[in-house]
Each structure stands twice: as structure tokens, then as C-alpha cells.
Length: 400
Image 1 (cartoon, rainbow, N blue to C red):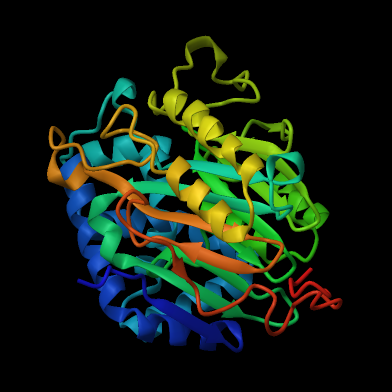
Image 2 (cartoon, rainbow, N blue to C red):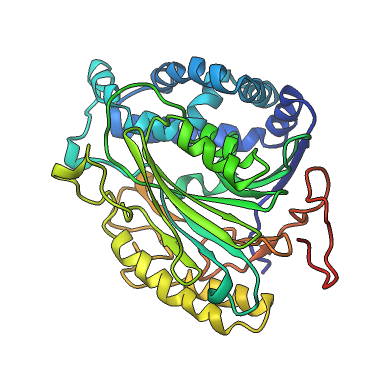
């Protein structure tokens, strides 16, 4: 039996037009996504989907002020899918809605049952990595992650290529309707991201999908870092940036300040707990949002150290897949599987395990848990088409 694969979608043109192409291509998946979140928010808070989209509306003005073209793109998605703009905005701000301090009060007003602080739910779980230099036996620059989130949205995930000159061309794995999440661009920059948790003040900041898309819209690592350092996101999130020149940096971004880390021996791994230092705003009572992150990170580091012995890109992908398939602590392991003890709507799994060779531009991803899904080689190369580096192909056949 053929393995399940992720749909690949390519869009281009002005923002509204590429949004329309996107919305039309994934119309059924967007409707499936809104249906899932309607049920999930209803179960956790008692809110209707109309109340959730009303909550999401508070991010419309900040996004329009910061990146009006992304609002145009979201409107195009809505038009193509036959839904409202606020439906698409809610899909893009679902993590912010979960973590918004006023969400609990609104849930209570709607007859819901908001959880206590100890019931804080991860906005997203992931384990990200970068490996290059002495950590990479084949001499290539590698980046990727296990993206762990609700199993109920697995059939909404798509691989999206956005051709948008003069900005770089992007390849990302996203939930249908989202304008940004994890991926890499034709400038040779990869962004892998992880939720961090913690509640901060209720000042409205930008949704993570907007921040992450804006990072990948940049041509240089310094401009990408500038986005992270100069924008105020609404919730805390970790961003691991890797570039093809053999450099990586990890930023733990929060509304109250940032921490940062550099690779050790060419290897950098990050999970869902603060590794650079707990923010002062959380220090007094901080507990990791996802305790399993304390296991996942060292297990990924141990497995990825084998990359030093790699004999080539095929061998490197095999090592990465084996490392990211680790099951210590199953089901809440590095390779995450649904926990039968949890309610169905709260089942978690590794939706995608990605593996990007920033040296050659080859992008691989699994359509589910890496332990039982092989890498899908995307039909596009990062360095094909508009936005590719001017130096093009190297003498060894790789793209630099």
C-alpha cells in the first residue's frame, strides 16, 4: 500500500491573487480545519466558532498596520475557500486565542468553563534542530523539526510554495489557510519554531504566523533576526534560524524580552522549554509547559550526533529520521503519538517531520510520524526560480 503523502500547493502573483489560488486549492481542508477548531474550542471553553472569530478580530488591525499585504493574502484565501476573513484570521491566530488572558473571561461570559492556570495548554509542541560544520559528516547544512500538534488537523496540513518576487520564494508546512509557520526560503534561510508557553500582559501583539512569515520573507539572516528582535509577538515562541552559509542562532522570543543560544560543535536543538534562561516575568513560578520537552531535547541531541559519521546526504537523512523517531517516553516522546488516555479532540501527534538540506536546496517531509512514514521529497528545490542566490549552481552540482 502506498504511503500517505502531503499535498503540494504552489501559488504566485499579487497577494490577493495568490491567496485566492491557495484558498481554492485547499477549500475542503480549510472547512475541515474550521470544523475541528469549532469543536475543540467548544469542548475546552464552551465558546461557539462565532465567538472565537470575534475574539480573533482584535488582531486584524495590528496585522494590517504591520503587513497589509498579508491581510490581502488572507482575504484572498477566504474568497477562494468561500469563508470569511475572520475565519482565516482565527486559523492564523489559534495559538494567540488559546493564550489570550481575556479569553478565559470571555469564555465565562459565554457560559464556558475556562481552565485554571495549572491547566495551561501548549500552543504548539515541536523539537527543532540545526546541524552543520563539525556536526555534519557530509559537510552540508541541515535544518528541520518534528512538528507536534493536534492529531485532528493532520488532514489539513499542506506543503506550500509561495513565489512572490521580489521577496524570496518560500516552502513551508502549514495548516490549510495559514500564511506562515515553519519552512525555508530561496535565500537559504530556514526557520523552525516551537511553542514556549507562559502568560504575559494582554497588550495585543502580532500572531506567530505573521511573525514567522515575515522572517521567511527576508533575504538575509540579519534582516530575519531583525524581524524577531523588533516585532512584538502576542505569545512566546522559539525561533531557530539556520542559513546555508553554516550559521544558526536560536531566539526564545517573548512579549517581555528575548533570550538566545548558539550551536555547540555545530549542533543546536530546541524544544518547548526555556533553554537560554527563564524570563524574569515568569521566573517566580515557572514550570515547563511540556515536561516531555525535557526528555525530547537531549534525546534528539544524542541521535543527531551520529550525523558526524554521515557519508553523504542520503545517509544524513537516514540518521536524521532515525534520531527524530525516538520513542523514549512514548507516547509523549520525540516522535509523538496520540495518547489513548486523553480525549479524542486533545490527541497529539507528530504531524510532520521535516528535513531541509540548505546546501543543495532539497526539502523533505513526512506525512505523519517519522517512525512509520518515509520522507517525501518535495518537487521543488529551494533555489529554483525567483529569489534564488545569484551564484546558482556550484561545480559539485549543489546549489550554494
